[in-house]
Length: 157
Image (cartoon, rainbow, N blue to C red; front, side, top):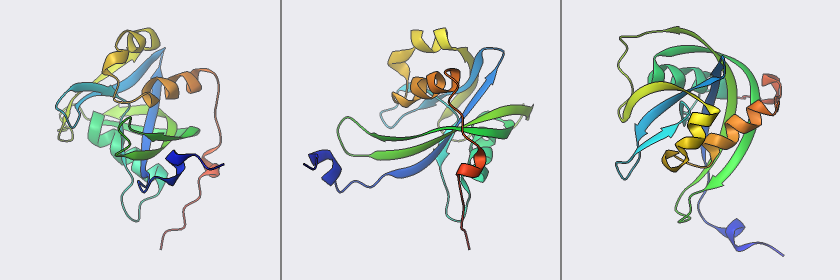
C-alpha cells in the first residue's frame, strides 16, 4: 500500500544545517520565518546550483552567524514536510567545528543574531523552533550518530 503523503506533488528542497557544539552549547540563529515570527534554527539554508553540500554548509554558517566552520561528519539526512503539506525539505545535518568569527560581518537578511544555547535551553524554547528538526539534529548528534563526510558525493560539472 502506498501512503497518500508519498504521492504529494511537493518535491523536497535540499538544505544543509550546521550542528556546531562547543562545551555543551550549540550555535543557533534567531531568524524571522515567513510569518514574521522570531524562531530558532541551526545555521542552515538551501544548496545553490553547482555547490557541494560541504561548500553550502560552510557558506550558510558564515552568512548566518559570521563564524567560519570546519565540517567534521554527517549527523543525518532528514526528510520533513510542513504540517500544511505545502513544503518539503531534505536536510543534511553536518556537524562542524566553529573557527573564527567575523564579528562585524553583516548577517543574512532575516537573521536577527547568532546565539549559543545548551540542549536544556533549546528544550525550554521548543515552541520557537523553526521545525522539529532543530532538536532532533541536536539529539542525534548527542547520541553519537555520525557518519564520514565521504558518505556525501558530489558530481558537479
